Every structure is written in C-alpha cells, then in structure tokens.
Amino acid sequence: MSEHRLQNAIYQFFHGKRHPITIPNCGACGVGKADLLSVTKAHLVHEVEIKHTVADFHRDFEEKTYKHHALANQKGYRTANYFWFGVPEDLIEPDDVPDYAGLLYVNEAGGVDEIISAPRIHSKKLRERDRAYIERGLTLRYWNTRLT
Image 1 (cartoon, rainbow, N blue to C red):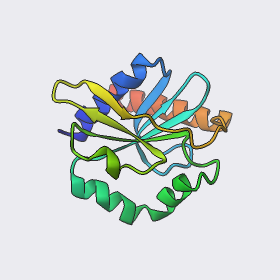
Image 2: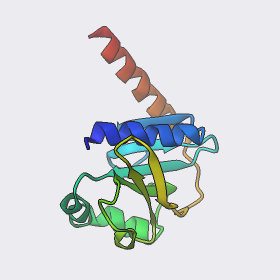
Image 3: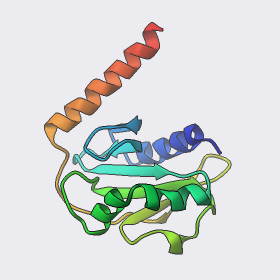
C-alpha cells in the first residue's frame, strides 16, 4: 500500500473527527517533516508517522532517536500533542508500539481502525504563528498545483 493511499485513508479518519486542518508531508510545528499532520479545533496537533514495512518501522527508531526520546520523555513544546503510527493492517503488532504512540491500521478498502489510542503527550496548544505557517503552506501548495 502506497504512502499516498495511507495518507488519504488517515485524512478521512481525521476528517471524520472534524479536524479542520490535515496536511501530508508537513514540516511545520517543529516536528521535523511529518508524514501527516492534523490539527484539532482546539489547536492540538496529531502527527502520524506512516510506515510501509516492518523494517521501515524499526529503522525509524534508529534514525530518529532524538525525536523518539523527546516523545517518550514528554519533553518540549516542539513535539505533537499526539503521535501515531499509521500502517497497513496487521503490519506491526500492537506490542511493538511504544507507550507514547497510537496505532492506526489501514485496510485494503481504505478503512482505518484505531488499534491503540494515542495518549496526550502534552497540553500546549499550537502557536498562532505555527498555524499561520501551515495555512500559508497549504495556500502555496494549492496555487503551485493549480498554476502548473
């Protein structure tokens, strides 16, 4: 299952929860480049790390040790409020998911099952300047696509 297809399915999941902003491949909010970033009406940020293979899942912990350390220790404003792994159905076992993360399975039909709810890592809301940055980025993406 492609990353694009996983992103589309997880977008629908968050849209169903009435998140006003969901964007793929977003580098805002200090989270690095999120595979998918979604913001709630209350300005809380959900980051989804999308994985295609078991090896890709395990490699994430080796390549992004600082990020996972910050998430595990609930350190810093610059992490998302909620962190998820989004994977094809049954790709990884729930026991493989760290305590600070949730797990979303995407099935072949494009449905999403919330296997593990993501715990809240912190309660600090998205800063206004970060929200404006996301909106500006969305606007630029739209017009770059439309004008080409």
